[in-house]
Image (cartoon, rainbow, N blue to C red; front, side, top):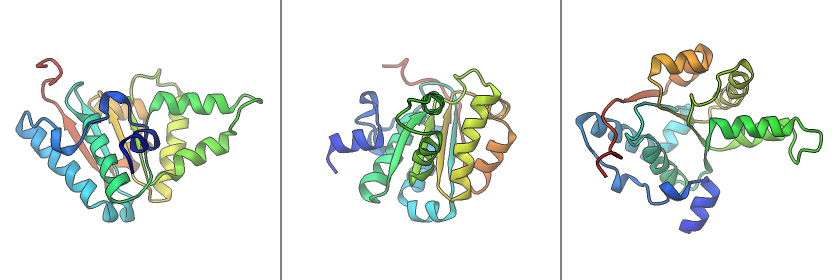
Length: 194
């Protein structure tokens, strides 16, 4: 798979086009710990997928959560030859809302099917939405479909886990926690040092 194919098929943004395990900044012991878990997750993908195990990466902005998720997707898509896709919670919600229009290109079912069939789905920027019941229901439907089909999902948020649980609801966090790992990214942003 070429770099251009990878960026397009996995939906990696230009900002993270070069993100990999090789260039992740190990700025603290906690960063090294999380890096090791994410790297192990990617390289033991077959077992993670068979068990339907996901990850929750939550904590402070600028600590490399998205970078590590891209690195995982890169391994899954290139080395493991499986379908990985990165998106944001807001994009998922907008896609569902567009599907409700009678002139929409995709039905609600087709939209759900798209997000439910990827071997790995990464949902970034959880917590920047309004947190309405409608938004929670949409995200629950996607995550629950994947959970029932043993398809791994990675959730990324700048919220601490306690706030994330309140934002998404206990049902989602409970499903993500079963067999999955929650990693806290609580060190200072490395963007400020650049």
